[in-house]
Amino acid sequence: MTTRQSGFLSSRQALVLLGLLFMTPAFVAWVMHNSSEQGWRPQGTTNRGMLVHPARPLALPEAMMVAGQSANDFLQGRWTLLYIGDADCDAVCNENLYKMRQIRTAQNENMRRIQQLYLVRDEALPAPLTALLASDYKDTAVTLMTTDQVQQIAPSFLIDGVSMQAAERVYIIDPLGNLMMYYPPDADPGGMLKDLKKLLKYSKIG
Image (cartoon, rainbow, N blue to C red):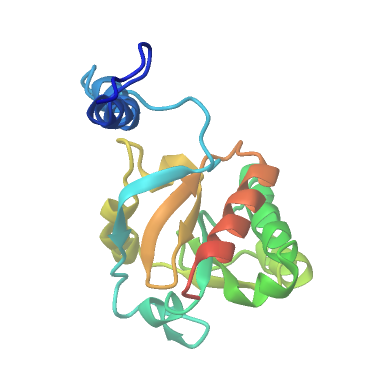
């Protein structure tokens, strides 16, 4: 009968050790995740925008029209870059419209999968804004909103206690009409571009 050489593991011991090696990382991750009220999160993230979790299905007012169709139908089938602002369109507004245009254009052949929408919290466009849209943002759909419509959509865009009136954000809406991500006004357009490129790469819709 042969005896096992000293220093070698039995098959059972090796199996147990292998199991521990596989289980340890998962256990450590679980402990770190549950070690605080909010859980541990890695500092480096792959997205530059802020995720809306869970994503919010948008139900815009039935009477709201965009580009000759209902606003809800407009949001179906393509990725939407959305900005909500006032009719005076200050420097922040202009910068956000510019970012949206450039990010869409930079997607090259995928730009057909993206659309831009500017919801205006007013019932009339002043001449300067009309001229700006016609000259610089021809591909941006523009819709005027009544006071009632603004109040109806406000809860959907209330995030982290900040209302859409004060946020000056750019939102990303998926091709199913779900609000899923947003960017603050000082967001790096390069990061926004990378996020959208990644969404288009891995998305099976839109």
